[in-house]
Length: 356
Image 1 (cartoon, rainbow, N blue to C red):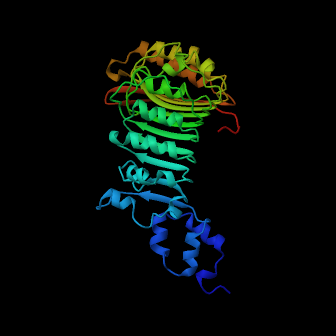
Image 2 (cartoon, helix red, strand yellow; image 1 turned 90 degrees about the vertical axis):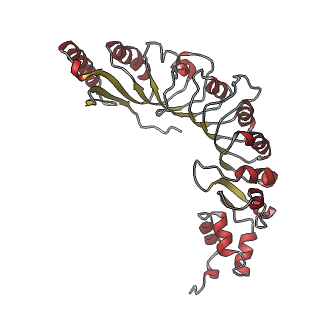
């Protein structure tokens, strides 16, 4: 019969410690007894480290004695203690990046003055697979991300850049999954730079629904790059116009797309928009295996509603509803908010398959 925790198999302690943050492990088990000291110094234990903001000097915090080389070379995950908050990870990387030989995942929010040191750290992190970074981007940082050949998954949250972004880079990235949120990329320079240098990209997610930017549809009607490996695309955006050609190059740019999800807000309702949706856009989407299209239209004042407008809306509502079939499900919902009619449309087409 097991009478003390030291008699539990070491495999069980390795599993338990995998759920605990590094500081918690060392505060709770360091110098507890010889048995746990042996476990903590063994190569079986890998660490997830979180850094926050403390009262003492950040450099002093980063080089406290318990960050020995034997600990540093077993850290696999490094992130802030509080999401979307600045912390001492940049200082930590300045001191220790060459010793983080097993670091696979890095999450960080940085200031502009820290970009150069982060770029240097990326050059040293030869095991890094996942990078999440939040900052005001510049050319140096974008080139450094593209040049880090080990990264396969990347999450970027960028504020408005304060310097011009050149779409040229000598680096080709191995990134396969990209999640990106841009506060402002009106001219598409950041996305053009990234996507034209990510030939292995398999999954792209753009989440910008809460920020209004013009001309976000350039990704589909400009053939500035081709993503032959892309299988899954998810996006949210707002727009003030619609034209038939918005998605005309969808299959040219994204030659093997199998999953397409789009949430889009339009600032108007007119007959032209519905014509584009039904007669120009949907025939393109029909060639994709899975489609999830959600459209919100803010339109005319309910006080000016008339028979012609109602007839026109009813006509397109009947067309949308008639599109329902075995693999296609549609829904039309109309509401009034502060005197304005809002139309919500969903069109979903799905076959069962395994997609990244």
